[in-house]
Image 1: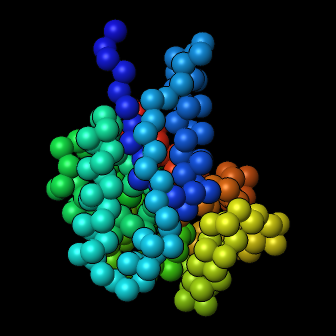
Image 2: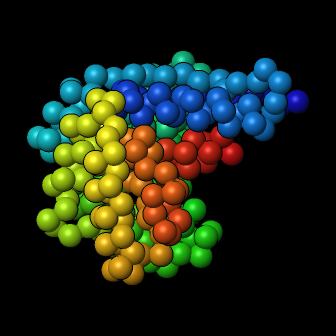
Length: 228
């Protein structure tokens, strides 16, 4: 039997979704190996407010350097693969990957791969305003041959508000679930054959029963790709 590998998580971004990463990693390992098996996980949980301030100021050099340093800490502690537990912070993923000796699994690549494997050509994208509006994420998906649809400008602000003001602090409401159902239907009406849940908190709110097309939950897909 080969030596067990250790998964490194750059978490706290938000801690609500990092808890999901930890749960999914352990559930997946247990489902594959059975018995008392669980995942070997190192978690480097950061203060989200500090990191968000760097993103808001668009200080990409400082943000990249900070997250690269945190990834290096995980690698030096024994992580064999690193996950950055946030979609929008992948804006500096290349800087992180260049700074460490172990693989950094890119969350958009895993989502795009899953959509392609399902035969998708046109995909909807839900996430923070930053993720939906900026080129770094959309371009990564388009690089895999996908046409990307995002919500109307009138909906972007409310989607962003629900993620930050509710889901990031553990608030899950039926009203917000209904709102996301309507936004997802609009994406389907625009041509989306499936929808990427491009915020790691969205899986706290949305399930496959909330849409008439396949959903691609980035948190779960990210974990599975790393374990594979």
